[in-house]
Length: 158
Image (cartoon, rainbow, N blue to C red; front, side):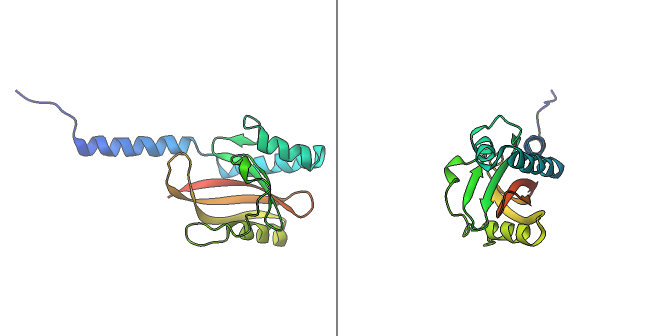
């Protein structure tokens, strides 16, 4: 009698592929990140920074949080002014924050905005909340109100 079973190697590869497809479908795109930053800067100019920062930080169901994308704002000294994923970071100095390779993340972001007013910082490594692994990421930023950087990061995969 012939047995029909599942090859464990094939099963393992199928599961890995399924997780990667799921993780990719949960990722926002570079275009979506740029669009979100543009909308965030427009809200800051239309409603003022206090209202906008509260919207970014306190309204996870808004247009400023989609899939793994969220708006965060830092001033040029590195203080967090708004954070759509980690509200507890607001008010804290992040200037010394580094990725696992030692890159100064917030300083790098501020340098991009100071020099070009808009652009991408990265890639760098960050923990992905979906996969729970470190992945490459880059962040799109524009100058906001005064000396601030309005940003959204995008995971690029491993």
